[in-house]
Image (cartoon, rainbow, N blue to C red; front, top):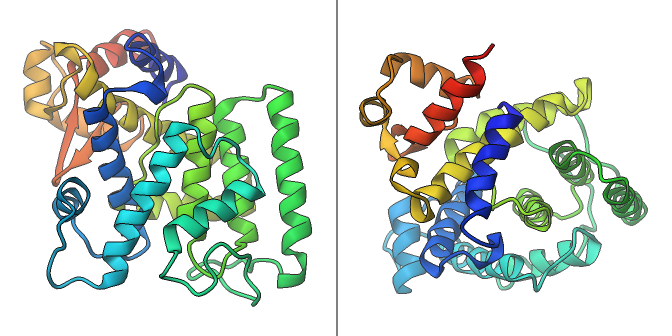
Length: 300
């Protein structure tokens, strides 16, 4: 995703006020999408509509496990703590607190580092042995502080922080969910909104993490940039102007008066060039996203 497009979208968000103080309705919608996405990636079976009912109405839904329901309610609560700033830092203490909040009553070792050796399903790489976890996490924390002090690029820094945490795999279960909450602490602290990683992103996300072992952070950094663009247009749909409305590709094409075909728009979204988000099986984008793409990428 072109950084000029990302930065222009971010400026539109910041024009609406501080990221942490968005309207309650906007935050609630973001909590729902983020909670559904991060849990579904890990096998939680609730649909987006069901997560909405659980979070907004406190309703239970039939034919789902107690664990699926508890993960939903408790992740939403943890995310609210992150957005409020009550869990303010990317460090070991935050990781333990978040794990405890999400998995209290679900895992017997909620809020504790793992005491067994584990493997990551589908990965060629094995996490470090249990006796190395604490020292490696201390190095991870110190390195993150050093990157912050050097004011390194926010997305490159996020990719490295997230990759190393996931590689250490410090919990017996729940590493991905805690790691993605730590990502959101990082982005919020740099005045970027919540980043959403949705079920359709799962393969790209895992491939980017796997690629980092071999080829460095480039692919994971690009993945985070693309998903941040999706997250920005999702939030702007709720707080922006008419041209920030999320529309189907055909609707957006007409609203932006562009010669781009819907097939071309879909292609550029899947290539990570045009901000877009897939909701309920349909690609959506906004007239302003198309306008920025045409202005910035058209010059190339």
